Image 1 (spheres, rainbow, N blue to C red):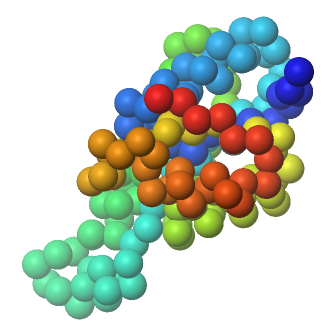
Image 2 (tube, rainbow, N blue to C red; image 1 turned 180 degrees about the vertical axis):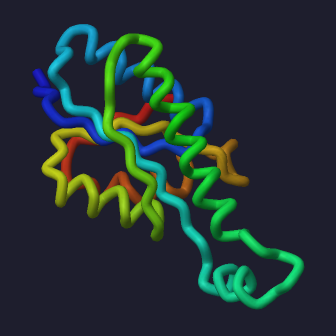
Amino acid sequence: MAVFNKVLLPTDGSDNSLRAAEYVVNLLRFKPDIQVTIINVYHVPPELKAFDHEHPFAPGLVSSVKEMSKRYLAKTAAVFEQAGFSVNSESLEGDPAQVIVDYAARGGFDHIVMGSRGAGQWSGLIFGSVTQKVIPVAPCPLILIR
C-alpha cells in the first residue's frame, strides 16, 4: 500500500484540478496528517513581459496573470477549507511541467496528484500537455484524476 505523507497538488483551476483536490481531501479523511501543498505554475512568455512594460495600452498583463494564479490557488484551497483541512499554497512562474517536477523533487513529496488534463486550449485530449510532460519524469508516484 502506498504511504501518503507529503502530497503535491498542482492546480490550474480546471474541473479536473478540483476533482484532484477532492481526491486528496478524501485521503485526508483517512490520514489527516498528510502535508498538502497546492501549487499553480504560470508561464509568461518573455515577449509578453516585454510587451507589458513597453506598450502603453497593456499595463499590468503580467500582474493579471499572477492575480489569476492566486485565484486558482484560492479556489482549490477552498475545497480543503470547506472540509476542515488546511493546506499550503504557492504561486510559481516558469514552465509548468518542469516546475512541477523540480518542486516535487526538491520538496521531498511522496506523491503528485493532478488532473489528467487542464484548462488549456487542448483540454479535450486524453492527457493535457503538462500532464504528458510530467508523467515520464515525475520523481515520485503520480496519480491522475479525471
